[in-house]
Image (tube, rainbow, N blue to C red):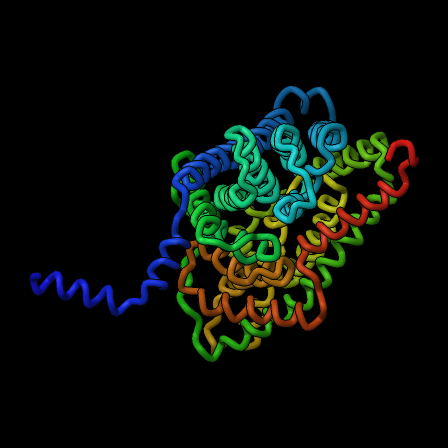
Length: 466
């Protein structure tokens, strides 16, 4: 026996056989699961990217119609009302007629499906969420595209398991989670945030194993590659690149986080109250539901003409805020106004997400806070834009209760890696204070409300229908 062989044997002898066997048994990842997760990621990336392009196309077409034929035949405000009302009508009708579970964000539905308490009717959800979201987001309503892409991604995961007739329950669960991760990665060009969103925010529902983690990572990467192949590799939000703040200024980021922690609890409560308010208005009757939704869409069509800052998801607004030109007072007024418009749109049950509106709100308040701090403490050499970026992560952390996801999401979206320390401080402060005040994560809160309403509807049905 050679010296080299003796050395190898001594190394193997030093490692307990049980440890080797345990590692190998844990790492027996079926290649089929990884291949299916690649398919899920590619499809989720393609659908998510196509959805973004479709919403952009509808928005541009709406503007062209206003400038051309319709605008010349009718007053501009009436044309704007009719076009946006029609687009919103399409979204609300598709949801109420074919897939009520496609209303709102859709993320709670995926969490419920991962828990085995909500169905995934992918053959209905994918087209309804896609075309319905095109209508509502294209009308100018304050909604984001990330909720639809996560729900469509999860639905694609279930579609793949049905097409390939996957029987194993854990594999089905892994592919459902993989689709959700791929959907978020494609929505914001943020693969790390997509992975962490499933691992952190969906932790009560996610079944942790080496297989499931690998599947989620592979899907998010695949989806992001598709997104970058179509849209390019630049960050979703173009902002100045900030240097790390001075250490004596870090306490200001903690203070901002505390303020967002308090506001996050209030924000989540307002979401539930707004949903209950609109439920009392339309009473889930189709006629009332469609009239209410169309009027909201028409209202935002007019608002687009005169106050575009309080319309839309807010992603395009963020660079305008961070590049300066606004006073702190105006930003705070805009902050309050966008809270109201966010509640109107999301609370009405329109198909659309709330991520992007939250990021815009975080930017508004964060930048206003930075301007005030700069005026009060000029010696600290504060850049207000740093607080805008920190505010994005803090509000996400306070409402969704996923600080690591919020930090990664903001860094990937803005490409500001030097701000990781202030982002951690702000997000941690927001989460701690939100927990101290007893607030619930927004998606868990929305899922609980959905299940409660479903139970009440079942109790109201006649006994022969049951």
